[in-house]
Structures are given as C-alpha cells and as structure tokens.
Image (cartoon, rainbow over all chains, first blue to last red; front, side):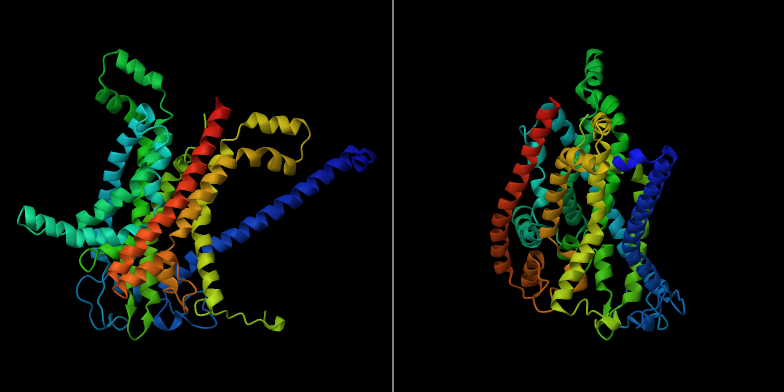
Length: 319
Length: 161
C-alpha cells in the first residue's frame, strides 16, 4: 500500500497490468503442461496404430511412424478369414473387430436404454414421493460402490450353474445366462442404474412441482402428467444420461471379461485378446482398436459436452 | 538426465516401485477429468453475491479462494473424494492391462488378487469366501462414505433452508 501511494496512477496501472500478464502466462504454462500430459497417451496410441511391428517398442522411440502403414487397421477390419499377408503378426489367432463392434453396440445400447427407462421412473418416484425413505437417494449408490469383482464370482455361479439347474428342474429346458447377450445386458443395467438415478434426480428435482400441480388440476392423470409435462422437460437430461451410461458400459472391462467367453465379445475384451504367443502383446493392432473404441466416445462426449457439467454435479448444485 | 546419473529408461512395468507408479499415473490420467467436472459444476454454482461482497471488502484473490470459495465447495470435495476412493479401491482394468499384478505382487490390487485366485488358479470356493469377506470389509467403507454424504447433504439443506 505504501509503495502504491508513492507511485503515480500510470505507474500503478502499468505495474498491475504487468503482474496480470505474468499471472496469465504462468496459468497458461501450467495448462499447456497439463494438456500435454493428457493428450500424450492419446497421441501415442494413434501414432502406434500406424506403426509396423518393428517400431512399436523401438528405442529411442519414434515419435511419428517412420514408415506409416495401414496394416494394423487392415488386420482388425478384415472381413473374412485373415489371409497370409495380414496374419503375419497374429498367426495363432484371427481377430476381427466387426463382431465385437456389433456385440458391444447391441449390449451397451440396450442396457443403457433399459437402465434409463427404469432409472427415470425410479428417480421420479424418489423425487416426488420419497420412495424408500429420506436417505434412499444416497443409499442407492451402495450398488455402485461395491467392487464388481465381489459380485462377479457369485453372478458367474448364478448365471452358469444356478439358473440352468433351476430351469432344468422347473421347465425341463436348460437356460444359461452365461455368455449370452441377455446376461450381460442384465448385469450392465443393474450396475449402471444407480448412476442413472443420481443423474436423473438432479434433472427431475428441478422440474417445478407447480407445473405438475397445474396439469393435475386440469384433469390429467398421473401417467399423463409424467408423459406430457415431466418427460419433455427432462428430455435433454435423459439424452445426456443415456450417453453417459452408454460410455460407461462401452468402457466396462471386468464384468465382460468374466461373464463372457468365447461367444459374446465386447471391444475392451477383444482388445485384451490381441496377444500372440511368439510376440507378446500386439501393440499395433491394440492401438488401432483403442483408436476405434475412442472415436465414438469422443464424438458422444462432444455431443453432451454442454450438459455434462450439470449431470455431473451429483446434486451439489442447489437452486 | 544422463549427466545427473539417472538412467532415463525407467523400467516402468518391470520394476516393483516403478510399476506401482505407472498404475498410479495411469489412474490420475484417467480420472482427473471427472473430478475436474465435479469441481467445475461446484464452482459454477457458487453464489456470486458472496464473491462480490468479499471483493468489495478488499479480499485478495488468494483470500477469496481459501476463505470463501473453498469452504463453499466442501460438498463437491466430499463427493469427489467418496466417488474416487470407491473407484480406486476396486481398481482392476489398469492392473490387468499393464502388469498382471506383477512384478511379484507389487501391483496386486484387491480386485486383481481375487480375479487371479478364481480365474487363473481355479479356486472358486476360495474366491467366493474371500468375496464375502471383502463385501463385509467394503460395507464398512461404504457405510462411512454414505454417512458422510448424508451428513454433508443435511448441512447443505440446513443452510439453504
């Protein structure tokens, strides 16, 4: 303060400006460093996906592939049985991304849709009728907090032993949920339901009750109120929740690895399978698959970017 | 780095300590964005009048952050800590993809240990017993987490009312 008092106003302003400029450059330097940290693995993955087998673990590292090749992509996108020119790196196994892509899309989309349907109505009832008591909206998170490995073993036994046993005893038909779409969809629905409820609660809590009340006074039933008043107002929230849950399922690894083999394959499981006995991990095709897995997620993320902040407030935003 | 006597070629995945750090860094890389989003939504919801009031009273940006914004951000911090610690406790994917619990047992997380017992060594009944035990242990953590969440929430609601 004393220093400021002895300075002329111009000097003070210049000083302030200089300090602000310095602060800004420090801030930008930190942010640039962070961007480098975040973007580097992604850059490396894309770069590796264009490298031929010798360059994957070259030392000193090749920042950009010296001889760019589409070999890895040709290998994962091969339609028929892999011919000799392509199978050089994965002679033992022939992998193709198409089945895994279809499986993953089907399972993730169905599970996300199912979870969204159940979760929206559950969130509505929790928000409006306090279903499950005062703290239910918090205790519902318990399901999400249990480590999946703990339930994975019991679910596996349930799917592969108990349900076939019971169905044979009762209906005389052996029904197994192990390694089926239905089984994976069911478990994904259950594991993502808490997140759906949490996100939808933040959206539904914001719908003013007076609107519903007005609709009720005009003679609309409860179902009509939900369909014509509440759902249109939270539609954008539902889209965000759907996409978020879709991405969660898309990236899920443990349960897919545990509950399916060899029929149903999701992309993450396929990625882990790309190893050959002679060469170890096939980094090139793995990087190519990683890039392919990432692209839809990035596109979806851009689509929901605007609404994401609100969905992620997890109820900390108060009106 | 060479002149300092440090070999820059750290054996990231085959050295016991380096492998732990490799997984830690991977986890930081993966999840910082989520906590960032939680804090961003927390910051954007802070009441602007309080900040203006502090600024009018001559608080420096540093003081505004530590004395006004930080305490108000506490619910978001609690949520982020709970969500992240729960997710970190059940860490599995980076371990399988990077190290398979090795070298030795230096990166063996709880989830990976259980998975290995069942699917590598085929000890199903051991796995089932261990998962029940784990469930009990985790219930304690979960109870504490949920309790903190509810308490935090009732504080917030009390302030709003």
